[in-house]
Image 1: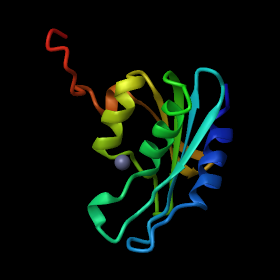
Image 2 (image 1 turned 45 degrees about the horizontal axis):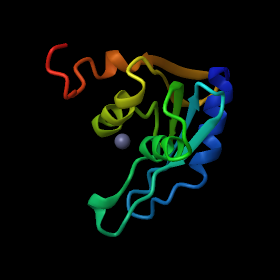
Image 3 (image 1 turned 180 degrees about the vertical axis):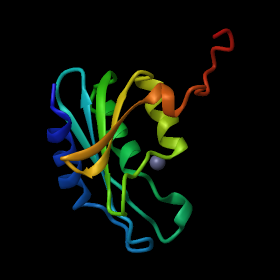
Image 4 (image 1 turned 90 degrees about the vertical axis):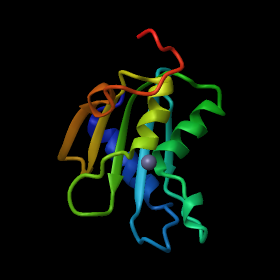
Length: 131
Ligand SMILES: [Zn+2]
């Protein structure tokens, strides 16, 4: 398993590929599968703003469409001051596959925060109504 620093560095590398001409806010994500493979993502904006997709979801979709559906941890590195937290939509998508996911936020490998997905999204939507 990657160290938090390794995963944050991969998120920073991925951030270089962000396409954010409208907001100027660059985000990179690095998601580690149970296999040890790391899937990266960067935010991709669109002139039709609502079509923009976050870095985290791009990483998840890359992984799942490559055959990996179990994940251990994700690092998220934004370009703003301070940590960049995942949005609600991304938390819901991550919860589909890894409700106990470890989440690192921070764009400095020496300074980051650690969360569990279940604390950021304690009541994720589920079709199972008998939780
Ligand atoms: Zn998001």
